[in-house]
Length: 161
Image 1 (cartoon, one colour):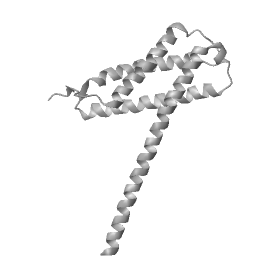
Image 2: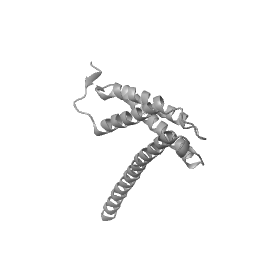
Image 3: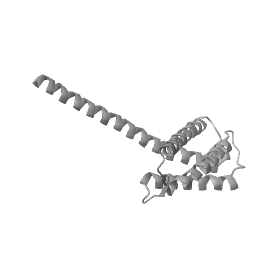
Image 4: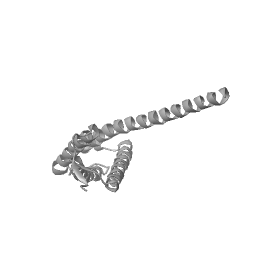
């Protein structure tokens, strides 16, 4: 039995993951090679390193999962686990970057490129996580309203009998 086959069509989320990774990996790579020496009273170099190397690992994962489709349930479960781990990693980077952004610093004047990258990362990922949070709330409310509707229908049937 063949465990791997070619995908017929990519999902929209796969394309979005690919372009997200490509854009931030390119930006952090350029910063790594040309602007990493900029210094300010925050450790923005560490933040850029974490984004860059994390996205290298994530990009490798995307290349492994983009073209083939895996039929093995254990492999799919493992890849879903890796998706969740990456989401948690980006969320932690978002908190770390937000903490650096909120604390008093001289980075806009001393390290403008690194600070702009931090602002852009916070803005883009903040919007993404806000959309995901609203989708989750919408899903929960939708499930609650359906269960309430089923409960009301069952209650009416009980009283009609």
